[in-house]
Length: 409
Image (cartoon, rainbow, N blue to C red; front, side, top):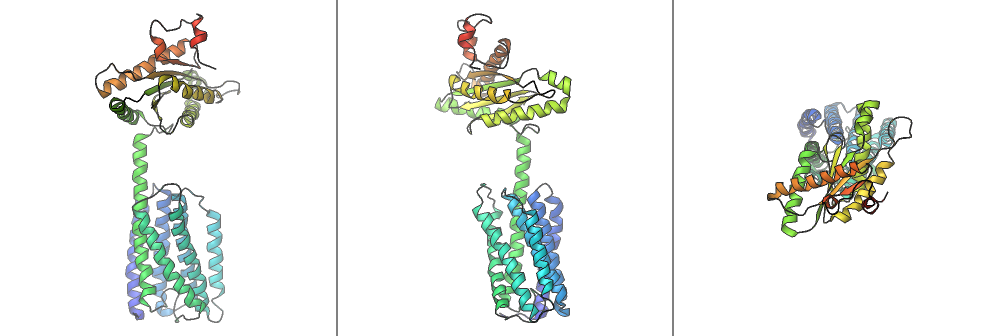
């Protein structure tokens, strides 16, 4: 189906004006998402370029066409940069800037040559086809597990762009290009309408992806401790009740480690709270790197942390306790570099004896907390087991029993 020039201009103005308004509105809404901001700015550039090319349909100024094509490429590359950030890849800032510069210079360079319109199609559509292929390929091959409801829409939109841009590239190679500005010179409905539909589809898909990312970040903020990025007290309690309920159903062992930073008040008093926060972050990182994927770690409050270990008995949990002790001992404290951090750890296994899930969780934490204070009594920088707290087995500080029950250092 062939379209007349006036229809082409009207369709382009309606679509790109709508996309421009939507993109401008999304800039504020997607501000919390780094990828979302790039997608909004990219579509803003693409929409502005589309309107410029539509306005140039009558004047047919070749330099305006070249500038519009370069702006199209810049917008699509900006969108692709957002895709890379979304997928956790290097953003290619310098490479993208070089790509836009080279494409823009090449487009301007051919404006004075014979058959400049065909040359412009080869360069412009070729670059856009490459970016469309990279965008679809990156989303399909991303290994970060980041998938969204909007991802398939963006992939389909990129493939639609790729199809029409390859057709435009081929038309330029064969010299079968009607006179007129880049992108608005084709009277073929397929080559014109398909990328316009793809632009709106892609904008919708990117918006969904960005909004899901913003919502996920807010949910993480509600669950994670702002300083350490471990679970906060509320999220830890929720996870604990779930694990205790599973213990009631299946009877698999469940252990708890309560961890307290030794002499932390002295760190704050001597070096200030900012230094203390830095030490807490490093200790939280050591705890997070020591635990297994199935273990649940959180900041219980202040300088106290907690780890829940499903399918783990009290003795098995001492392996994790020793790993944490060793990692924390490698963290230097602020000052002359001769002092290092340490923690005391209480370890307990859930053994029942309380009513209800909440009661069992409180009893488990209390047992580990009592063991923690015993570890501090024994000299700090060590762990203690809740089972040692029984009168018949509890070692007496200074007694020979300490050598039996004290942790391996």
